[in-house]
Length: 396
Image (cartoon, rainbow, N blue to C red; front, side, top):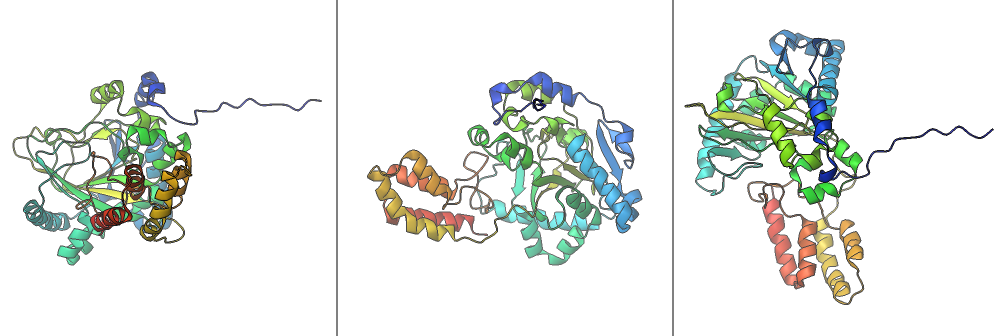
């Protein structure tokens, strides 16, 4: 008897913007969240489950109840809305107020020494950004840092998505009245890459990217809708080619037509899957200075097994690589392979105060610098000086 064969439907190996279908996206984002899917939520606001932490905080102290709540949050982030609100994540807002005072002092000081106010996915204008607000808060007011981050609700939602040993980073954003809206986008990792770079990653990496980070925002003031709280498109993280699609005009138009906004109160926290289509809203209020601490939490697994001094490797390799290239002994693919094994090809992590994104997305990487130097035939001395400058820009 001949063996029974089963046909298997394979998806694309790579995602291309021209292959994305708006109808598929619209079908996914047209869903409605049912109360039965989020039994511990106190309410559903515009397809977004809202969890009242004043009521649920005791559950975090019981291991069984804690895991049940965290499992529900993970399902929300992965399988349905893709976004949730922790209402009253800070039951007492004195730590919020103390941190706000420190952040405002940092903004004043940094504006005196830094000319650019450019932000990801938005033009420089009526906003202020503090890169690495996590470390800067600790340096300026360690006691306030303790009070601010001693928050079991924030810890639990981070662990629900990423597991233990996650890595916390944060950036404060203040948008003043008149501040423009952002363009719809997805977030870090692949959301901070150009369309060309994204297209080089296979489809399964697009799907993996969203499992590596969690996006959050802690409200440092009351945020009525007119102040421009984040526009969100629930269920949009379910569209697998979304990192290829978000720049398309038809997808952007669909986002603008269907996105929702939910007002927040000081001490509330919003968390969402980084693959969710979202954008900060326009602040059309008369007097609300919208301030949020934007949390970007990373998986513990986003690290290599060994520590490698790639700066030293680049300095040693440049003379023989340049010579081999100029003698025609290295094809473009050969060069690509040797630099992939030696130079750092990723722009992050870096110090975004001194090493800002060149194009609003990502700074030049060590690998890109190496490629540029070889293509332009720099001397070893010029290349080493450029590496010195890069290392200094990236220094924490």
